[in-house]
Image 1: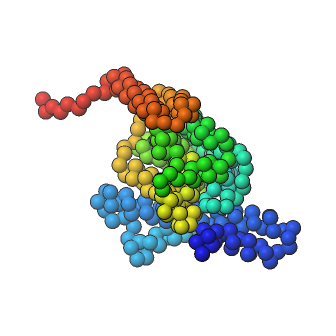
Image 2: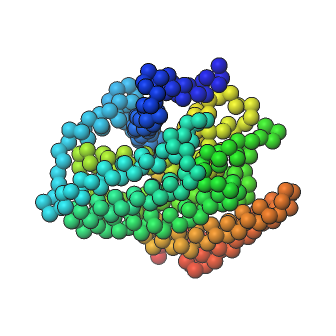
Image 3: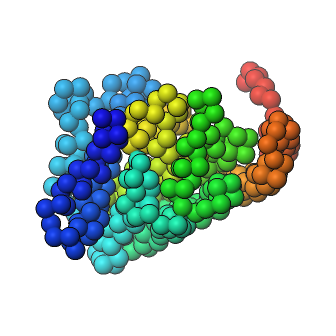
Length: 391
């Protein structure tokens, strides 16, 4: 019974395609998987937007949406209808073809990343040995769609927002890749399925997740910072700086095209959260061996939604950075730390089992972090706060 609950979607897919000829069944299974992704994640997007508006409202001492439906739960439906029926306005001087293709390209690219994510046991749409490489190659294409949107609008604010976004995304992609490289070093594979299987082990009932190692914990924090910047979320939402750029690279978008950008941003956040779950949090594996009876897909989606809650929490808590702070943080702090973490991971690998590697690797990371933080504060003339009365 437990096995059937875990494999319910796999069994349902096989049952549905069993009515087709044998030569059509592999293609039909792929189409069913694509359909499931296209239906599931936009539905989660609607739920996440409602949770975000409600959560931010509570953080800011207000109610949030509470008019459409009981407790405002139908607000995403109303927003969707409004987006579909709102007039699509294209500037006269804009490049119409590129202006139209930019949001479509963004959404298509974001959804392609889900093809290699293991969302549960035997629930990977396309199992490939270089799944991690494919994910990063596809993810890098989003920068092109952002630049297409800003350039085709023929609006100086849109172009500035696009250039900001491209500079930011390229800068933080480097530490994003390097923080993930430690997992490849330890697992010896680029296959996301094999990475999950390597963590799906237990000692005294506790999991062997990579986050529970010094280099894994540091890599996870660096990965979280880089993904926040890649997703253009607070406090790294410079490309959409409303106080400076109206709305950034999609200033000239309205109606359904704007909704596609909105959808692409949130589905992309879920995608990159799913990758972080796979790399550092054991993917679909249970946090305790005793909880192994819970379906694997429940753990995967639960971890992804928990990551989305952290994104919402950060948006309601942290102020936006300046552009120079954003770039300095990437190149002068995050990138050097990822390089140090790579050396720490190599040290961990070759020291062998024992408590010595825990002490040595933790000491190196803490020492480097402290020294870099203190030197950065001195360069920036940052010190203890002092309060004085106005004269």
